[in-house]
Image (cartoon, rainbow, N blue to C red; front, side, top):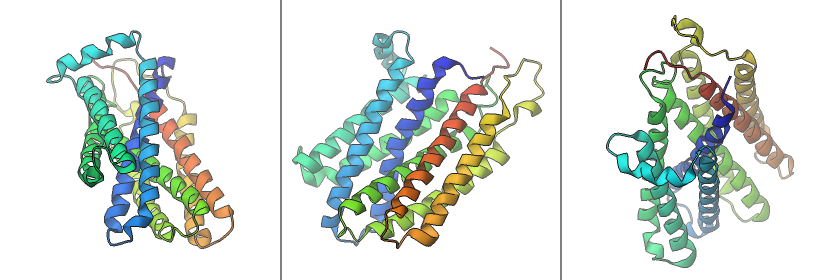
Length: 290
């Protein structure tokens, strides 16, 4: 069973990964639709940056709840050469800073709107390395269930699937308030394809790469993880994807509000699935040495 003190870590990692995933999804859409009318994307850009900033701020607040002495967090900067945790903290700081500058350049022309592209790319790069550093923090040689390629794959899976889901929700809200936003339908289709690919990768990672506690054959006591969380993880992943598939196949061109409801419901199921997966990750902690 997972330590109760780890719940802030569950939500810190997931919410910060949602933030990075929103930027990744936005970048994916802008690359795919680079010849589209730029003026129609301005509101969408602002909404994505607000969502990315807001989720990252919430994630950092939650991260302090895990610290016994939050004022000591500054000392983590002193060990950048050897500590992935120190790198994670500096990358999170740089990611948030560049994201804030990116929003200021777009919204207030500070320092300048022409710098939006380079600053956005810098923020995206910091975000990608932030997710990588999160995974590396847990890839400890004495923790066999974490020290596998499945850990970074799982973290990036959460980043993309939740980020794309959040972006899908933002698009749905934007389209409902702005009927003239003609790119929404094409963007939603691209995000659905991205989610579909990510679901497949996540299932392959779960069943092929993640080691099973019972097969380790360790002489050390291993944690007991109930099948409930495993079932919740898979059932809600498949349910969320099934709902989005139904929406994509039958509701995408519908003018009724049911289309948005399906997007919200499907994305909520994916979020529940990833919460269960992250719970399983922390609950699987045990050492085989010192």
